[in-house]
Length: 489
View 1 (cartoon, rainbow, N blue to C red):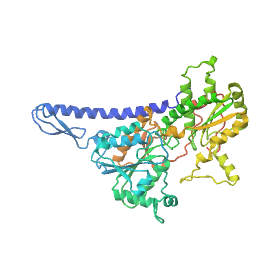
View 2: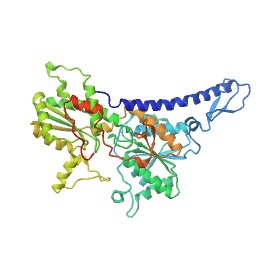
View 3: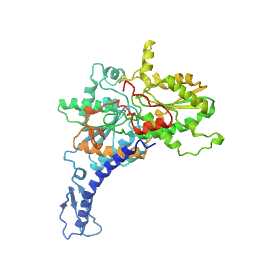
View 4: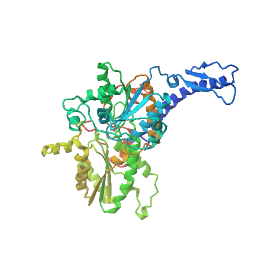
């Protein structure tokens, strides 16, 4: 089974390498100019091709040459004049292993580019924007910003606030009755003199920011919005790989590696591992692939009961595939009879439509969030599958374990850190050039170009491509039939 992330990893490493390689000749020119100026008999200032003014000192060793940026980084990156005066950052939606890191990298990058640019961070996402609650990034915070790159969660806090849902905003005390939340947010950005807004979130977060920018443009206020795609579901069009998704898959695998040992606590045990993914099964599939890849490296002692067959994944159910419960029940019962346990990986969105129909038919109200999405923790697909399949396979004990909160709150792994860093570099470049959009590898370009994807192209609910070779190979290895695409996808 091949690594499902290898092409992506190579792609963004190539892009990062080419970007940095293009910078080196200009840096070399700047350094060479500095050295030449230090040895020159006169002390006349010179300007390099990189846009740096070199102010040479005398040949006295106590006065070394210094570089004065004029501006340095725009020249090095092909930028233009007109730097922002004040930049704001906010994170919103659910957590992902990229939020704090992205904040830290943004602060570092702006500080290197021009430390005179003011940076503020809204506390609690759009809630903080509506209430005017923010943190000012001072000298100490800039110096320590790299610490954030090693932490999970969001240091400045998230919230689920939809600016177009006035009723919910009033209910939560974020705006007054009769106020338009979008106008309140726009007025706050104008009041604070924000030139650039960086939103780190999913499609709802970034499209809300785009709507704000459009609203302000109509009122003659220029705001550049540059978003970063945060979602562990990896379901944002047209972004190839969203920030934090790879780490979440790795952490979900780590979570289940401990949980799976519960099979030895009871005979005929059914363990259901519920993985986040409302409409997209990528995370469930990737978590199973990561888990099985690690499992294959472990030593076993079948003679003492330590058998990889008992620890393996026996079924993977995602929203993009139909599930024949009767047929799967027969297949899984044979596994239960042979190995005394069954382990299933299920997307939290698998079977949701069927569950909702059953709830509504029974006259039950379906709980929903501010965006109108069903609250999956209350709909509980994992419990539904456990009950249905548990009966079919004669399970004596059933356990449902959810790795979502464990996985999404993690600090990013090395691969995600590299991706986050590359995207932040591009995000700051786009902000300087006043190019709005959501930064990521654009699947609609020939070579998955890292760029600011236009807001009108950003949408959630991108399904996982079940025709991926690595996924079909994994199903074949666990002897699970490859079923047709679900109608809703």
